[in-house]
Length: 64
Ligand SMILES: [Zn+2]
Image 1 (spheres, rainbow, N blue to C red):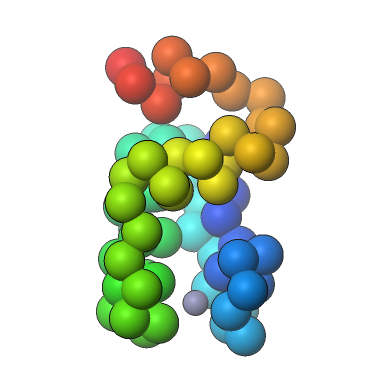
Image 2: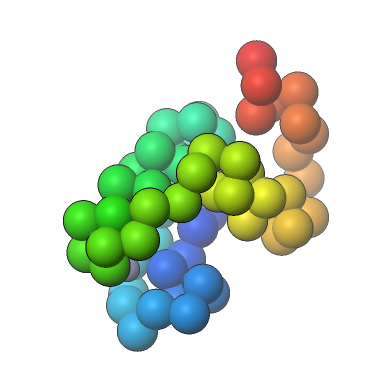
C-alpha cells in the first residue's frame, strides 16, 4: 500500500492518492498535481517522495 498526501508536499489540498500498485498511485498523484496545481513531477521525483516515507515496500516493487 502506497499513500501520497498532497498536503505533505506543501499544497493546501486534501487530495490523497492511495493504492496497492506503486506505479498507478504515482500516476494518479502526478496527474493530480499537474491538473490541480500546474506542477508536473517526474516519475523519479514522485518515486523519491514515497521512498523517503520509508514505507515497508522495496524498490523491486516500484520496478517490477
Ligand atoms: Zn492537491
